[in-house]
Length: 574
Image (cartoon, rainbow, N blue to C red):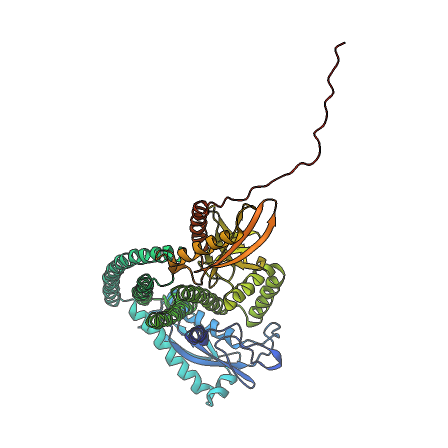
């Protein structure tokens, strides 16, 4: 569980930068339970926000307004500070972009309108002054300067903003912007082609490694289908070597997959950044350009952090698996136990990988909801509803997951075991936290939810047993029958082809029953896991031959009739 915990911790750490940049709804620091919108700071009785340029997105100045505690019920005459900022930006856009005021004849002036200091703009083509912004006492109090000085500062900034945009519309400046636009477009095209070429070569390399990995996995599946034999050291060494080769191929495939992922993000950054630079060369597209660095950038950040956390966590688990298998291979030991431990370990790691992906995906989903402006209270409500839905509508799923975890933790069975559960028997081909899938003797593929598994008969756990009972003729010598059976078991154990499958000397229990069908002799033979079927078939064949050679006949049912047969009276002719 240590690498799993580390992977989960590192995943959350990787997501922390994205979460830190994301606003989960409104800022809940307002007084009297009110909320403060994004970008607004409250200083007692005033609220402050920035006015950005609709042309290049730069900050022009800050404005202040009296605090509005409840924005859902704004009193008459109140103007929230964010509303004032939007109005100023719209008027600047009207003057510079829509009216395209001439920079040479532009006049940005201060004036007094209804006892309020305002800043106006006009040129030779537009003689009627356009009010750009008003300067209030709240602005002066924030800056700590007289209203006239604040107005003069704003006037200079607004005049420069409109005049600069006017100059950018001149033919020579448009030509330079067009040339920069084409250069950026050329760099994007060359960079995209180069990255796609590298990704294609990486994909070919991945296909070669995937083919090798599939070959190793098929070899392991065939080995798992046949339980390990005692004393077959060469076979165990070959199995360990194949297992290590599989892990190394997975690591190499994962490394190339990481490079593929990195070049994908390089391509994405190239296209995203190139689009931003292209739009920045177009006059008057600051609003569209600024929209690219707001919600889309945050969503990409969440996506990047989530995928990075997933890959890093899985990479950590893969490295832990490789080191563990290296230690197991160096220790050697019992082949069947080693294979069982390896299968259980890989099953637990697969479940851990899936759980990590789910946790990171949920964290990423919550982050996306925050980016899209869903309030934190709504996120909590959604989480509560999901929990309620799971508790009522997905009870079986929860029971499947809990029971699957207990099956893995208690090692009730593992992949490769032959079990009998719920009236179904078969070899376990797949096991995860939700379902167990069996392959029956008839080739049927059976899927059982883990919540339905209550009692399990494991036929191949640690060792298996041959239980053979043979009925011999009741007139046979019982001592001879027992001796022949015992000798057959000993010869089978001494056979080099079968002795490695027998883990304990065969035990002839004796005579279990006497009946009209004969004398029943029972024998137990403990074998390697899953080898009892083959051993029992060979033992029965040899025992039948030895009994025939000893002149001992198999038992057969007998019936004895007592009494006189019924008399049949002769019929008389009519």
